[in-house]
Length: 205
Length: 205
DNA sequence: GTTCTTCTACCGACCGGACGGTATAATCAA
DNA sequence: TTGATTATACCGTCCGGTCGGTAGAAGAAC
Image (tube, rainbow over all chains, first blue to last red; front, side, top):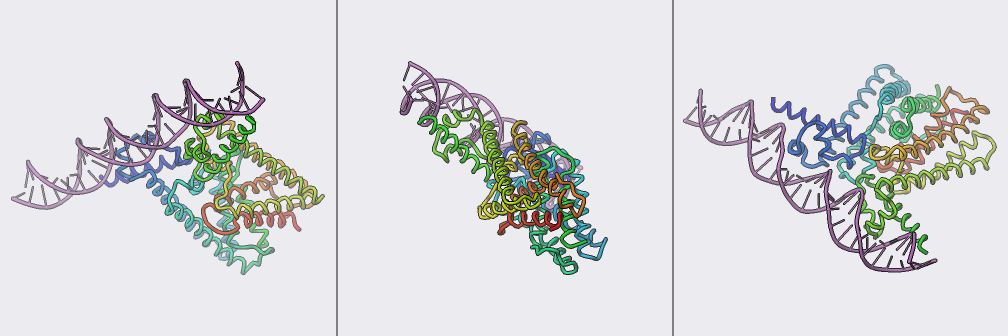
């Protein structure tokens, strides 16, 4: 069917672009390189994307959608496994540690959010907003849980719970930089375990 | 004096390049843009740097040297203020929090290490090694202190001290991403305070 | 059931300009 | 004079983007 091939062609372009942008950034990834990789022509590319920057937006929207779905499904899983908000958070971080272990097995894991934010000047406001919204929703979901947890388990130290929620994102993004810069085993898993240990110590275990 | 102007010319090129690379990345920063900004010509640029990638290496080496000096001087200051290794670490992180507050006042703070690692494919092995060495020396210096601290104050939980040292770098780099992506006050300071709180809880205080 | 039209999907030659880089002359202090 | 430094003009390549066109499926009309 016509529509089917069209959709898969678009997806293949997005896949190729994401992989190359991950390695060398957006500006250094030319349209020629992308179409060469998937064996298509320029006409095809510009049929699916009006400009290179529209590709960028489509990419980040796809990435953010997957990110959101992962956030929600992981939190739902955690909620099914315990009724205590603190335990839910710890299980949630535990699920992320599993993902971290997969990332650690990857040769060069990358996050499109970070890639874009280091070439920030190239993208428009709407693209920036997609990234900001994604991060804010992690803060909202995890922050809400942390507040519920704090009610039942008063923290040992005064701590701002929004920035504590942000810290998960911060650790994740920082781990990307470190795992790319130095070759060592288990960066993500180790860092996320520290974050979990902090939560355990803070809320008392 | 000839040498003097030469040196300052070179430095001005490096300054301009760093600022623009910070905003839009390396690939998207053209030599023409750099020389326009400082009001020079191409001949001048290529007298000082054989290629664009040599500029990249000079930039990262200058950045890494400053980073190293900051690491050593901060640790020395901390060592003068206390004899207890744990207190030294906590003071050290406290000094970083002060730096974090300055970064938070900045409109778009950036770290060249992270910028390069998100355009990794563009740089040669030696450039990568400069970054890896810098991160390793943070691990070495802070990790050493943490081991000394752990002897006198046994940690509440089993914790790998190298990755605990790495966590400072991780938090720092992650905070760059977050502070660029969402506009909110005090990202660096808040995140580094969480790191310090973790250390305090872990080693008991 | 064959003609005409329309639509999606794709192709590849081409354009102007920007890119990294070079060649070489001019300037100037010591 | 010499060597460090700066200016100007230029080169070939690659860049993002345009454009005219093709193939083929799906209707619609008769």
